[in-house]
Length: 169
Image (cartoon, rainbow, N blue to C red; front, top):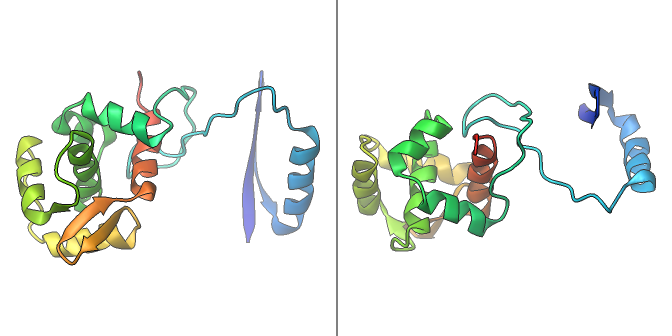
């Protein structure tokens, strides 16, 4: 097992996979030399909901759940699907469910609501919604409020926020 460390400074960009034994020393180094006067911004690790990991030079974008919801409210469903490159139905359910909630839709929502949301986004709904919602639940993006109603989880919102941060402003 190993962990990855990335060091970025002006004119310097180092990335390395380190052995587990180095973890304690790395944490001690960070704790001893941390500069708390500079705010830290989470680095996006994905370019889309399903895209490959990567670093982006632009770190602007929504950080809090409210900022994510505001961004979702200000965009169309089809636009979000295209920009974030959702390939699988569980990802589309996550994004459109969050979009629905951000726009003041009923919470929790049902599969019938999702059919309407997919139509609004000019997207065909999943042929096997129970399987796809189950996969989204397994991923921790969606939560069952009751056996047939759902809400987007904090993990789901963070996944969307991460993808939104990688978009150009």
